[in-house]
Length: 122
Image (cartoon, rainbow, N blue to C red):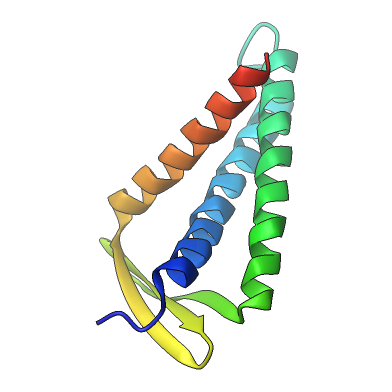
């Protein structure tokens, strides 16, 4: 049963998976800065920094929307195959279980979306 609205869920889930994508970008940036994986790392670092900046800006806007709408999302359980998140909205809560590979796919889709946006600017 759905307890929160589609719009509330859309905002909170985007915030959740975008936050995970930012963590991936930051880990990749750290790896690139500390290791010379490519002959010339700078263009890749610049691309990831651009993507990170855009993602953080979007997450900030989502956080503001969540605050205005009294939305929260918390990880409430995790095992080898599934992770449970609880979405809170105006005194309502809804639990969602995500298959861990599905989480990875959602994060990958966000990364691809951010990269496509960055490539359009070039």
